[in-house]
Amino acid sequence: MAETAAAGEAGAIYLSPHLDDAALSCGGQIVARSRRGERPWIVTACTAAAPAELSPFARRLHRQWGLDGADVADVRRREDRAACAVLGAEPHHLDLLDGAYRRVDGDWLYPTWRALCGPPSPRDPALARLVELLARLPPAARVVAPLAAGGHVDHRLMRRAAEEVFGRRLTYYEDLPYARSRIVLLRALGWRRWRWRRQTIPLSAADLDAKCRAIACYASQFPDPHPIEHQIRTLAHHRGGERTWQRR
Image 1: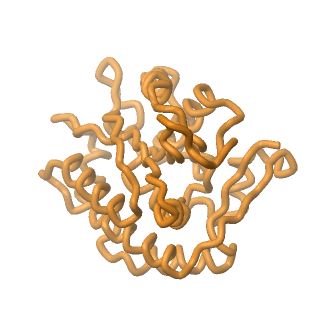
Image 2: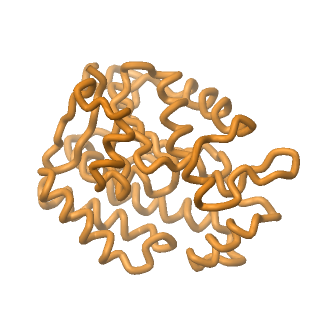
């Protein structure tokens, strides 16, 4: 796939299940693209306002984020716009509900963390909606989707929808911090490493610094950004940058 965008193309599109996933996993390569004069897109799925009624699990998440009683979507979208400004990326929000908020016929589809990191419910309408929305995106030189390492249902659905829309043209990123584990990563690759081609994208010190500043913008998720910054820097040095994958 050509790396130079033609007229009407978006250059590179990074598909992010939540507001922080692309920065965590791809922030260095995104800012490197912007330094080269590109304007990468970060397209985030789960950005809709929380419903008035929440499950006990969702209420616990809001308290954990320090956002109990706040307009969570507004806070997190503002964090994302600030992070994208640091990365030189263009934010696009698809306005889907987070998995923790989704319900059908009065039943919460993912009422626990274990359920949220398990198989998608066959009753979940998010996949069909994601396919519809991704199909409306402009042509792009490269589309980068999550491997869904870690198994979070929203990551799985984003990967499945992207595969349905873009097929083998996709590039995949390693979902961080989950993909730090070799076993978790191999599971996301279907235990068939030989069927994949890996690329390591070197990051300059400036790229890595910008990535860490962008991650720090998500204060609701990282009130103390130092631990995640240490993880990100250590992993980047150990791996030589950020890694992406394509099917052979």
